[in-house]
Length: 261
Image (cartoon, rainbow, N blue to C red; front, side):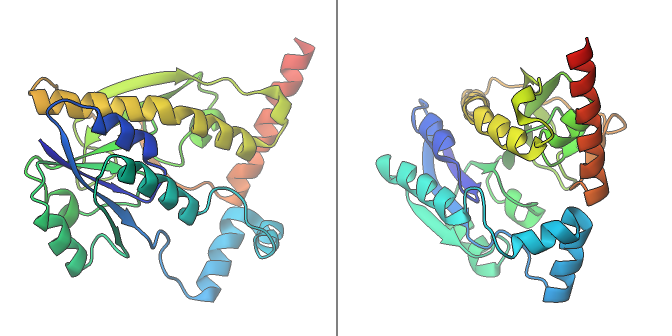
């Protein structure tokens, strides 16, 4: 079974797991290089204030944190090189040139890992369609960002879901799911961003294994397609500054109750 992988980077573990599967050929790794929509500066500032507040917006002008797209791309490209898998960088998965290139690989299955929303013009190119790794327990937690909303709602676990890609975000038939315990580490205090970043880094192994298990099952013809009941749960979106402040308030309350209990 010929598989193509579409990603923004950080897919090195997925490549390693897929490359080790019997009966599966990873025909190509496609990396989208432009990962954020191009917006006029006034719109960028308006959105930043909405999601990060005025102080956060000013702070972003003077600092850059976290893994850059370049670092994630290098990690992914290096993994592909180790297994002699062609790596193709595309500015936009949905451009005519990109679609033509994707079609030329004559893939049986697409694997989507860590991208923006992929339209049907792309996810339907492989013969069997495409599957996606969603860090959330669908259908209850669709959209994102991962971990934030589970923590916000006081959940005791976070789900990982591999599903077929459909037109609406994270609504396709489920293939496999797994849950991981979620317990807030008191050492982070109210710095939930740092906690979430560390927690998500620990999900990489489980995520890669779940993707590989799903691909292996599809290649062998031994897998289930479980339709989602989208009346359950909801599609979550980026938290606003107000919601982030509420997260800190809730965490402080939980931490105080834990200290008193």
